Length: 167
Image (cartoon, rainbow, N blue to C red):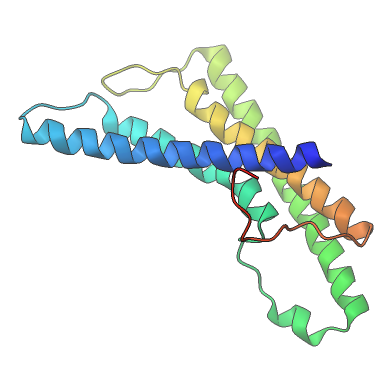
């Protein structure tokens, strides 16, 4: 499933690009204020970029084992109980992420169908920023399914965190 690993890495790279975009927008705002002008809708675009970065970063963080886990229960369980808990938690996470992905995609499609636009200075079709949220949750659901399959096969899902994005 190497292509899935590449998908999670691509999602992480896109997340990083949106973080850079946030930085550039903030810098542009600072320079514009110094010049007594403004960058139209920069706050709005920074918000969209922050949401995109967060949602697209979820699958990459899961793959790298960077999500917060409550490991206390796992330490006191025997190895068989630990495996059962891993499978159960992966199944539960798959259900939650699948539900979230379904509704994020439906939300973006609904915005597209109704032609919703933002109320800022620059009218942006709302499906565009919502598409990043939908894409991130769909990839997260795929990653959760991948993780569950790995758990059932008794294979590791998470990769070493010291690996670099360009592997």
